[in-house]
Length: 266
Image 1 (tube, rainbow, N blue to C red):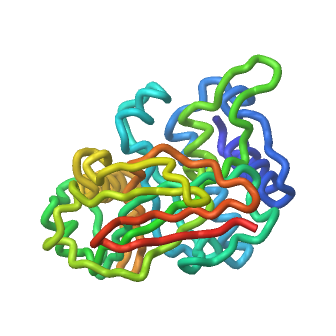
Image 2 (cartoon, helix red, strand yellow; image 1 turned 90 degrees about the vertical axis):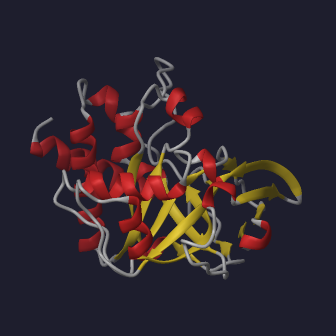
């Protein structure tokens, strides 16, 4: 793709979100689109939002589970940017029409107290740079059709990355934990919709350890001249499948001793 096509694709996504009307698959519009192209589109999309007054508050990591990687036939996670208008209070209600096709995932969030990046970054560096970990929900949305209506072709990884890794919202629980006193591999959640259990899972579903997920992001950023900043929130990746969140849904995640978090949809 050319730089002009990167800008064109980013504007298409920006307008899709603004109007609530999904666009077609970028992977069909731009055959041969690469991962670098997708991240370039994402970067331009975020720049468009920052220019409109939004502020970056962190990062999300996606496609960390083996099941999701197998589904998209990839062997690497992806990442997106968290912005201030994506943050919802625990127990808040998402206004009707805010999202197109919202889904929810349970994750462990890392709040950072020091910058973190570099190809030589270690697991201990991640723990030292983390202020606390907390239970969280990520709200996903897709500004791109999940499948092309004419060919039936499903969206692929470059579509998802371009669309800011399907990022739409974040909800943090009230509990705070030191990252080095909790074995995050064994932190689990029971996730319900309208009081019916939909999914359960353990932190080990995220690359065997959510800390490894944050480490992947820190190392990947070295290739793009970026870093995790002090004050950033990092969503380490979901250990459950996405749960559909139609109008009227109540989503609650019980992390046991680790805490709880919930969100409602008007």
